[in-house]
Image (cartoon, rainbow, N blue to C red; front, side, top):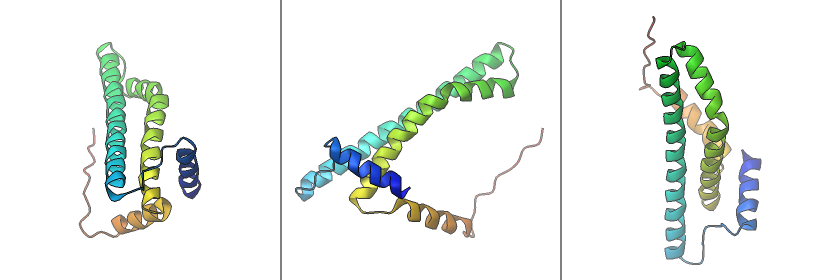
Length: 128
């Protein structure tokens, strides 16, 4: 993740896509704009998932087995999902880099915190 953040920092500088640091108001506007762009990319991930579910349901309606239909739909969406996840990561890295947040150590620290929570979500496993 450190190399990804480093690459993103250099790439954003090369493309002149840095967050504006010339003043508080410009930084604020730039951060809000980048956050808006991030949420747009997240919604594009949701759109790709919707396509997966719609394709799965269409194939099931056409007589295909549910598991096979879902597998084919997931394979169909894999490339587009990868692109949308990459867009999300680019914006997350940009904002994290602005705040000098080490995403890798933050990630592992957060996962350890979640693992040790007393109030964990309980998942029911449905048997068929």
